Every structure is written in C-alpha cells, then in structure tokens.
Image (cartoon, rainbow, N blue to C red; front, side):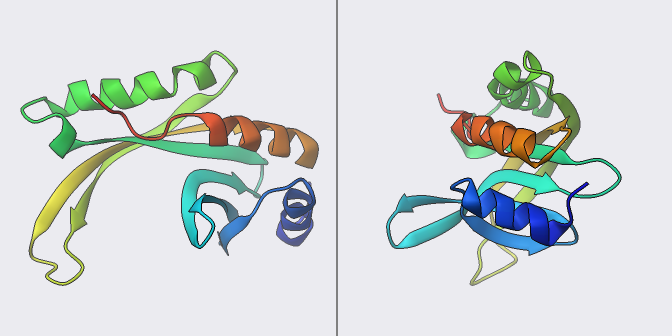
Length: 141
C-alpha cells in the first residue's frame, strides 16, 4: 500500500492535478478554464484499502416536483457505466447549497451518490481515476 505522499506523487506523474489532500483522501482537480481549478468529484483514498471514489449529483432545481427517490435514481443512472466496471455505491446523501453571503437563504439541494472501487495499486488507481473523470457528474434534462 503506497503512502499518501507516494500516491500523490504517482498521480501527478500520471498527469493528474491535485485539488486537495485531507485525511488520506486525495481529491483530483479539473480545469474548466486555464485560470480556474475545481474539485472534480473524483478522489483516491488511502486506508485499509486503496479506493477510487466519484461523486455524481442531481440538482433539485433542475427537476422541480420530483421525489428524492426519483432524483437519486437519476444520479445512480450517471454511475451505471461505473457499476458495470466493478464500482459499487458507497453512499447517498442530500446536501443543501446555501448563499455564501446569507447562509439563511437556501439556493438548492444536491442529491449525491458516491461510487467507489477498491484497487490493488497506484497504477490501477490512476486508471480508475481517469475513468472516473470521464463520467458525467451532474444530471441534466
């Protein structure tokens, strides 16, 4: 099992950009524009088992009137290509998105599903992270 530092260096050598590292989780970055770096929703965790994780979501405002269960189904559908590749659903949750200027104002609710896959080594982690980066992360109409 590689250390966090070793895995981070391997991912950088493999062409990934790191967004942040926290508590054994290396979050990968994406760059929608040259001067903008964002969390990609893909991470690699070091612990008892080396895992790659990807978070997909549905934004409630895009599907007004639909139940939480239906929205989670939409999110799970985004991860379907991953499940056929051996990924499993690790968790699902809802997250309130609040106005940063006025935390009392709710802007939206995101219903998120996290998929993960245990991998055997840093090379497989890089391969699965690359796959995870290509998955759509947000359901659209």
